[in-house]
Image (cartoon, rainbow over all chains, first blue to last red; front, top):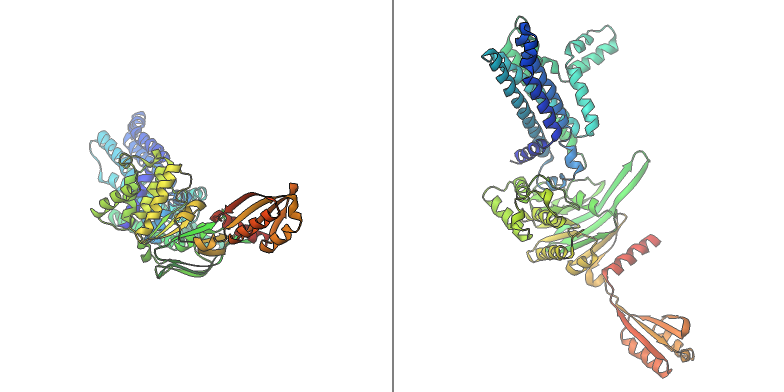
Length: 255
Length: 313
């Protein structure tokens, strides 16, 4: 009950942040522009709509997630609202868990809003919604959920500004998994070690980027359902590990 | 009477890494607060009052020492069901209404409906927040209304021990008096109040015992009655004839005498019975009694003297 109460309060406060609404509106606007760009390129209008839509959800989702989650814990400490929470019988892990759940809920609301508009645009344009488009939105949500977990983990000890750059940077590097994978086979030992650490330690955001295979069906994933299930499981387990680490750190943090 | 709060050797040191120095916020504090007391915890700004409270509530971790709250060790989460805290400068989520914020805090105590609704209403009525403000956004509340809401959230779980940090700070005289009376009434309900305040007149009025802390160190502790004992009187007499042996007789009764200009003698004495004897001596010397002024020591006098003595030493 306690983590849910904190999660509910977290969602309430996060949805009041104007910057979140700005990014959401921008994302929705970009998705809505899909048919216009498709009109300009009639041969590839379907591809343009799908790629622009998914990219808009990813881009807007990225900024919404980071900008919302970097403040979830620090703002409570800065405004001292945390005093009247932690002085009550609220375990520190309940507080952190509540923040995680609240953060995930905010991500879900935003991705769902953009996803609904995107799918409606697809239906409007193509007459039906291919199942793969649902998968694209679905995986983007889990990708952003993992990013939210990472950002909230950093927020237990880092300032919002530092957190922004760390989360953004790791997201970029995490999307370059093909590059980091190539480092693991480098002939230079130091590079190999560094590459291995980066490739396996940092979250692999790149695995969630299946836009190319969705948009260009000629490129196939061997077993799509297994692929999707593995990625979801990966996101859930990695998020759980980040939650545990966040609890450990926050447990000793003075407020 | 059982101890509601027992503090042994509580110490908090902060290390300033950049300036390479250690700051001692609380220094080997030993204190006991009995159940049912309103205990005043006094000190200058930065004396360590809030740090002490935060350590007791687990918001900050002590460097050394220990404490128990209602018999349970400090940091025990279960005992927090019986505690309450009103921080100085209480901050709330501005977008929420008074009712919603109390409902939120009640959920943190896992109070189910409909009991939660009942408690919220009782607490808002108890702090005399106008009903038409209950469902208004806290952003529109005055300072007094925010403080009332703060006290209400401290009462939501019907606590046994309340930690109140400057509950009447910055309030208008009427709100100040009302909230002071609310705090005083908590004693009648058998609650223990740990009150940190600069409003010494209030503390003197409602507290059972007080402690004075300075630079993290406990300077003195005791009942109000014991601390402010030592009333004295000042007698002012005048006359050239005093110099004809009368002053020597007066000094035998009251060693603290100051001869000022115009043959004026100021006498300070704590034994009121000696006033009459001194007046008799003055009349015999055919001098004049200008004034006899009794002085009642206040908590402020005690506070200032105690802190200045510590600073001087």
